[in-house]
Length: 133
Image (cartoon, rainbow, N blue to C red; front, side, top):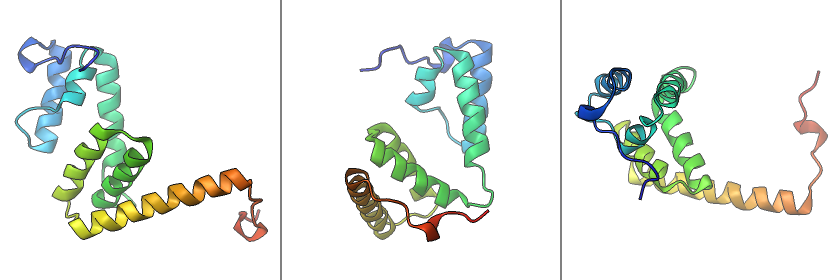
C-alpha cells in the first residue's frame, strides 16, 4: 500500500494537471501510472522528476530501447519491482523480445555476481584499464 494517496486527475491542482497532461501527450496514454500519481502529492518533485526523466530518456547517443534496457537492469539490481515492470513494458513497446529479456537478465545476474566477487576480494585495478592522461 502506498504511503500517500494516489492523486487522480480530477482532484489534481492546475500545476499537477499540466504535468499529467504532458506525460499523457508524450506517451500517448489515457492516464498516468501510479508512480506519477504518488509524486503528485509533492508537485515540485513531480515536475522535477518528469522533466529530468524526459531529458535523460530521450533518444541521443543511446537509442530509446537501449536506455529502457539499462533502466530494467538497474531496477533489477536495485530490487525495484515497480520499475522492473514499468520499464520492461516500455522496453517491449520499443521492441524488446523475450530472448532479449532473458539475455539481459543473464548479464545483470553475471555482473552482480562478478561485482560482488571483485568487491569481496578487493581486486586491484589493472593498469591497462586506467584512462591514460
